[in-house]
Length: 346
Ligand code: FAD
Ligand code: EPU
View 1: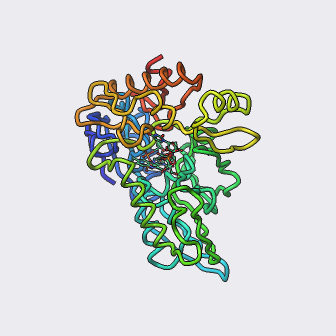
View 2: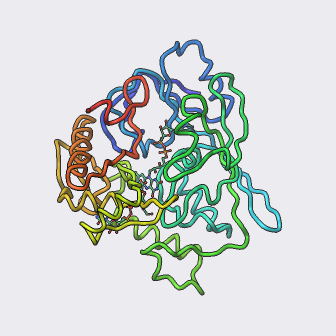
C-alpha cells in the first residue's frame, strides 16, 4: 500500500476539477484496507473511499485521506441454472460487462459503458436501459470501518431503490464495500424494452448486439469524461405523486413520464431542464451539456464554485417553472465529508 501526501485529485474523479487531498492511498486487498483504516500514523482526520470518482463533486480540497479502492479479482462458479460471479470491488464495471458477454455469460449488457468500479455499483443501484444492478445482484460483502470485520449482505438487506440503497443511509458512515456477488441466469432473455433498443429484433438479437447498441446510444448523448469532465446525470429524475403529475401533464402534455411505485410518476429531469432553455447555459467553466441537459460539464477550467452556482441556478429555474424540486444524484464532498447543494449554496 502506498500513502502519498498532498496530492491532486484532478485525475482521480471524472469532473477533472483541480482539488487535492491531504493524503491519497490505494488499497489492493481487504487486508490493506483494514491496515489503512487502523493506521495510527493517519491520525483521526476523515477518510473517504472512492472508486473512479465518476459520481463525485469535490466542493473543496479534502482535509483527510482519500482511499482508492483497487481490490481486484473475479471468480466464477456455475450451477445448472446460473453463473455466479464474486467480483472484487475495485474491478472496472464496463470491463466486467464486456468480459462476461465475451465469455458467453450474458445479463449485464444493458449496463455497458457506465463508468466506475463494480464495488460502487450497489451504492446508487446503477441503472440504464431498463436494467438496474438489483436485477442481478446476489449479495454485497462489506467491511465495518469500526472493527475491520467483513460480512455478507443479501440483496434484500441492501434495500435497493431508484438510485438508492442502504449504503446511502444506515451503512453510509460505517461500511465499505469490498466485493459484489452477481447472478447471471443461463435462461437469458434480451431486455430491449427501453426506447432506443426497441429497433432490435427480439428473435435474433444477441447480448453482443445489445451491448453495441447501448454503447452507440450512450456515446451519442453522454460526454466522454476523458474529453469533457462530467459525472453523468447530475440530478435524479424526480418522482411525484399522482396529483402533481396530473397538474403537470395537463399544463405540459409533452412531459415524458414513467409510472413509479405506489401510484407515483417519475419525470424526465433532462426534459424539465431543457424546457427552461438551459442547454449550453454556462457559469464560469461549467455548462449544461448541449446533447443532454441532465449533465453538467467542465468545459476545461471549471471550479467547484462554478459547478455549484450552475447547479443552484438549474434547481431554482426548474422549481420556478414547474414547481418540481430537483435533487442531485452526484455526491458532494466538502473538506471533511459529505455535504449537499442546499448546505453549501442555500
Ligand atoms: P465514486 O464516484 O468513486 O463514488 C461514489 C460514492 O460512493 C462516493 O460517495 C464514495 O465515497 C462512495 N464509495 C465508492 N466506493 C465505495 C466503496 N467501496 N464502499 C463504500 N462507499 C464507496 N450511473 C448510473 O446509475 N447509470 C448510468 O447510466 C450512468 N452513466 C454515467 C455516465 C457518465 C459519463 C458518468 C461520468 C457517470 C455515470 N453514472 C451512471 C454515474 C456513475 O458511473 C455511477 O454512480 C458509478 O457507480 C460510480 O462509480 P465510481 O467507482 O466512480 O464511484
Ligand atoms: N430529454 C430531453 N432533453 C434532454 C435530455 C432528455 O428532452 O436534454 C428527454 C428525452 O427525450 C427522453 C427523456 O428526457 O424523453 C429521458 O431521457 P434519456 O432517455 O436520455 O434518459 P434520462 O432520464 O435523462 C436516465 C438515467 C441515466 C441512464 C439513462 C438510460 C437518471 C438520473 N439518469 O437518464 O443514468 O443512462 O436514463 O437509462 O436516472 C446517470 O445516472 O448518471 C445516468 C447517466
